[in-house]
Image (cartoon, rainbow, N blue to C red; front, side):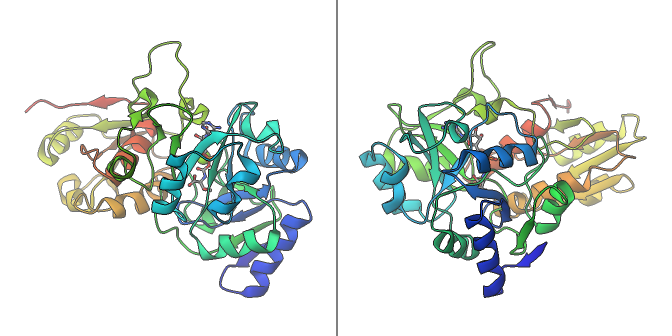
Length: 340
Ligand code: TXA
Ligand code: MG
């Protein structure tokens, strides 16, 4: 069932399904989430089953405001209050010591729980009406790019879930930033809608988990279990081609181009003219890249595409870091740097 987030009775219907123990896909400002009552282990099990998600990858719990934190976490450190004041509601997730009411299935058995207060008006209305914290991973089949439209959700989950609340395309387009506040200094586990510089501006020192840049030592686990999976990837292998536009275009044209598709910045399309080109935004506007990336990766999931050469921002400032991380993960961190 497709519900319309701009209709009050559809928002109420989504909330009543959730109250009845069903799972429903909801829009957030980052990506669509597959929501269910976070305090009901059976419901949480249904979320994992619908996604085909490995059970060792914990879920984010969504609450209506920072005042609800003590209902799911044991302690609210000063840093959590500071971040909540600065960035909630919004695309930031805090990892904190969990309370026992949070089922093991939500946290994959960890002693911590990830919590965020989303900004999307429809999600907030559903949270209020449902009256329970909502566990919500991204509403994609495990391994696929996160959904940024209701159509993406239907593509992955139609027939597996009772309803999707359509709120149009997501404003941010990449998932929330995840920060672990149980370590000193706090540690960035997943770059996202809130930039590392913004976190450091209010918190001071913040470490970056090595898994974010793909340089996890062999045998070491990432701080965020989800970071270990190949992810966000179309069926065809992706390789990031570094260097200038001209260098990258010359390198790509020197390859066997049958089955090749190119994912590039808007301003580079002409340089790859004649090839199968998908653009995802302007390199001068990181927000446009974040909004366009997952849709572009889904567009590239076509049987005739057997190899994808992708252009990735080289900056790690602000939202660029999240875009870079998602695209490098889609490429399993394979990059080539053409010579001059
Ligand atoms: O923007 C978002 O965060 C979206 C929307 C729907 O809110 N949700 C989302 O959820 O991206 P998901 O499940 O796709 O990603 C959650 C990430 C995973 O990498 C998971 O491993 C990590 O958060 N995570 C969850 N609980 C954690 C915990 N206790 N400690 C460390 N990482 C955790
Ligand atoms: Mg996800």
